[in-house]
Image (cartoon, rainbow, N blue to C red; front, top):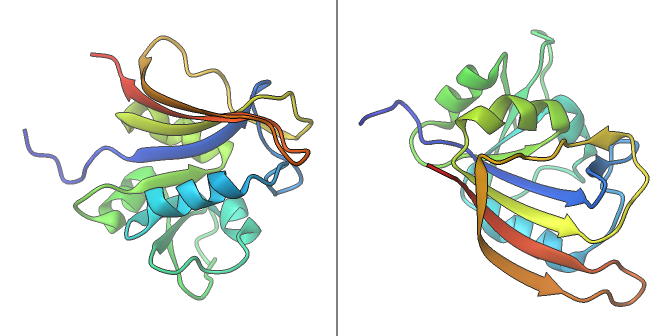
Length: 164
C-alpha cells in the first residue's frame, strides 16, 4: 500500500485532567520529558500550530518546523507555513513527521496517526489548553514510570499504537 506520506507520530505531554498547556506554555518543567521530546523529534519534520511555534524558545536544531496557520501572510524565519494538515504532511515528505501540538493540531492529526508518544503527568494541573481522552482506538505497548522528585510530579512515558 503506497501513500504519499507516513502516518504522523503524535508527541504529547498531558496531565491527568487532560491539560496540555497554560498561557501558551507547558505548565510543568520535566527535564526527562524535554530530553525524550528531543530524542523523538530529532531529524524529523515537526508539524505544529502557530501558537505552539510561538511558544518555542527559538528554532529547535536538527528539525524542520512546519507551522499550520490560517493566516496566508504569516511567515517566520526557519518556519515552513502550511494551510492545512494535508499540506503540512506533503511538505514533510516521506518518512515520519512528529506532530507536537497544540490541541487543535492534535485533533486534526489524531485520525491519521498510528502511534502516540505520550508523557502522562500524574497530577491535575491548571491550564487553558486540554487534550480530550484518546478513547478505545489506542492500546498501550510500553510504559516507563518515573517517581515524583524535586517538587515535580511523577510521570510515565507511554507508547500507544492504534488498535487494529
